[in-house]
Length: 154
Image (cartoon, rainbow, N blue to C red; front, top):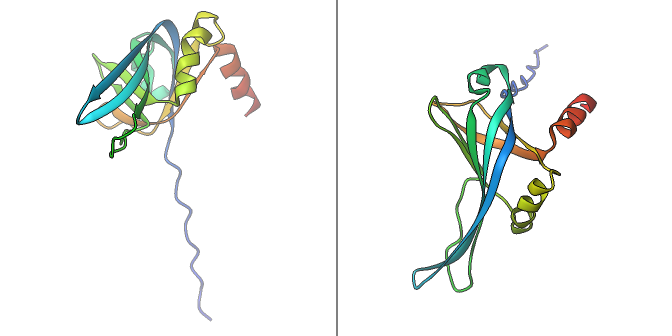
């Protein structure tokens, strides 16, 4: 009788998190209409302070992070499409920043939600950092109380 080998389940990769309080937000809009490229791009830049982190990111607590949320689309008559990373995170000793590409509706609603205090914090989950750079897995914008409430339910 032969033994059947069972396949081992892959160990899930660790997820690291940080939460940051939004201090200021400002939108920008950029449009290019040139023969070789026609696109419009919207950014909402968030100036934040990191208030909570996973244990391995503890050295960044209390530090500023700039988060740029962007939406880019090519206008008609352009053959190439945008090839962008969805979320990109940098956490180094002297540089902390992130870029995330969002749908247009989310971008345009964001400054008003921040001004009304409906959104006060941002949570970023990422995979393991390599030389201070990681791929973001998710971004969540809400109030800190709501983040803690959802965490308690899990």
